[in-house]
Amino acid sequence: MDRIDATRRGVLSLGAAAAATPWLGASHANAQAPAPADTAPGPLDELGITELRERMDDGRLDAVRLTRYYLDRIERIDPLLHAVIEVNPDALSEARRLDAERQPRGPLHGIPVVLKDLVETADRMHTTAGALALEGLRPARDATVAARLRAAGAVVLGKTNLSEWAGGLSLTHHAGWSARGGQTRNPYKLDRSPNESSSGTAVAAAANLCVAGIGTETNGSIIDPASANSVVGVKPTVGLVGRGGVIPGVPSQDSVGPIARTVRDAAILLGTLVGVDARDPASEASRGHFHRDYTRFLHADGLRGARIGVPRTVYFGYSHHADEIAERAIATLRAAGATVVDPADIPTAEQLEDLHSSLVVQAYEIKKALNAYLAGAPGDHPRTLAELIAFNRAHADRELRYVQQDGLEMVQQLDFSEREYREALATNHRLSRAEGIDAVLRKFRLDALVMPTTGPPAKIDLVLGDSYGGGASTPAALAGYPAISVPAGFAFGLPVGLTFMGTAWSEPTLLRLAYAYEQASRVRRRPTYRPADVGF
Image (cartoon, rainbow, N blue to C red; front, side):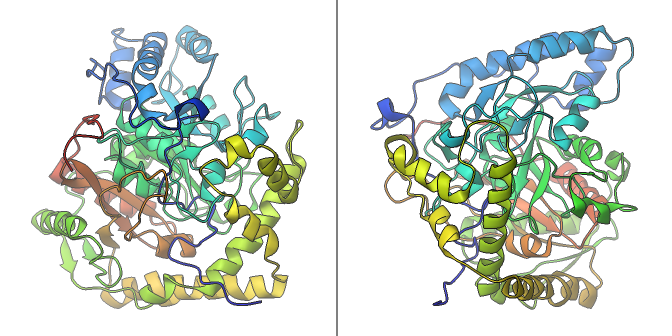
């Protein structure tokens, strides 16, 4: 077999698509922009979990009124954005049941959250990965993360749109496009990409269609849409959050994590999600590493005395806008008391961007995981990857009108042995861990690395797909290590985030640093919903 290069995103990565094709449905193929909507801010916009719970505790608010508030915003604003693929028809009844309980279960009691449409729920909603082939799929039980959120008292408001099959459908980047949900749009400028496959959750949080939500990441699919939509995204260490009942991509890299408007809200959600999951063997490694309350690590002066490295090679230089914003962020870190080591390059940074071993791992794991999922999922749908490809061809007028399925087809055609796979996975881990992130942290005695998450979001391109310049996600993706993106600034009104990256199980440290930076910078602002024909 000829060698097929795997780029930084990995040509096949489920959850790694960085661009978009704006599909608005068969009857709207020539539409240039959605119709105007009432995007006026509401009285509860930008309020976080703590503020909302305070209003609930003193009687000014209850779960039903809060849920109605977000359902109304979804009805009014989501036609512009296509962020929500499906609303939970039982959301209000869930809220009523929670209001009837005499004591709140915790900070999430009565708080409406959304789930990426990879997360199974045993209710009247579907779980489809955005694909027509899984329309009607209703699992018999909640995914572990959904069950934990419900047990904590959260109201599951709905499912969010995504890059179909989490970005694995096509070799061309199509962030936020699915045959079932159409094209998700960036709320800061409606002709811009929402970036990566957890785009619906990021857009919903940014536009105040929910309090917060759940995304998944294989390579960039939480932190990149967080950056593009000026919200916080936490990509945990692989195994910290159980993935039982989540449609898989590349299991050695897949993470489930929170997306919210603030670090505090993301920390609250993370504490609810973590813990050993009997349905996910990888979560066994989290014993002794997870915390039920991550808010205790949040301190406004958390940067004082920290040692933070700046890896310049690869992660700077692809966007002068991102570089300028990152330089201002680095100055903020210094001013807040951090020691900044600059440069502090990852020794293997350039190798990590173009690894044949990455292609081997992705192809092997996707085929195995997806075949297993399709074979076991209930209902009438394709049972194998080959049957899925045939289904899409039979429904090409809807599934393949703008986007080809060459990503799925390549996965099906490639055939690597288990030995080749094991060797490739070991190479990925060695270069990204001991010789990569851990090497630079150890050399300079660093608490974390910081770099721009990615550049300002590119324009949605119906014909060619969105362009992609560069980003920070690959080292943590291949290592299975944590990363957090926090809003860092705007270029011509388009958001850019700052990524904090560390070693395995370093979420407490990263959250402390990210929170202190957030408090010192305070750059997030509400979306503007600028139409396509206005400015840059």
